[in-house]
Image (cartoon, rainbow, N blue to C red; front, side, top):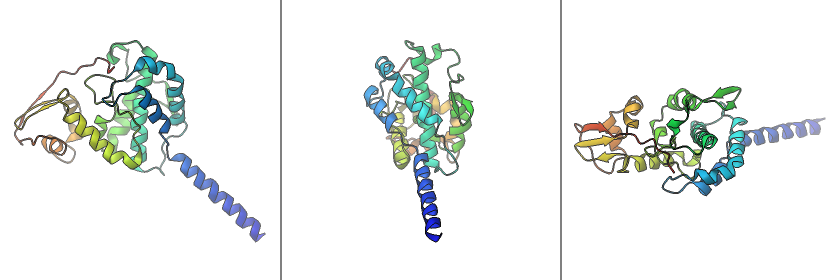
Length: 236
């Protein structure tokens, strides 16, 4: 009886360990898809993505059946929702391709095609009700809107064990790209992302203090701030 009980306990533990590992999201399929269709500079080959649309939908299906739970770390959860947001954005574009701009699609950020843990979610809900509430302002340089003025789409998945460096790199890349932001010590012409989400960037510090963490040019505390026009053309 004792041996049988030990055997049952061992089986239970093995199943539990396997279940825990399965819940830690593997985004290799997303990385493979991105590396085939997204350049290192963030240009997206939507035309050829259409050929592999089934692969994208298979990844999204994988996401919908393995949603974060209380056992996931913050970085695992952040990486999951960043990748989910970007995959759903690509899916939206492919559903309407060819299209010149995401804004040519009716209610692009409010459409709902997939259920997550029993709830149909839109891009707006993922961004504003989930990601922004996780108190990580750098998500604004990781999630993309398929547009020229957006941060570039990283051609690999965000993953928990590299997330800190990935978010830092994404923020530095976006901020120091002269096509997105023009920075001198006393004059800033910033992306409207910094205007739309200014509250997020001022959670702990001032906007200037936030920028100085990632800017290659030291910025004066009294620098004048203006905002550039946003180019919504497709990022292809």
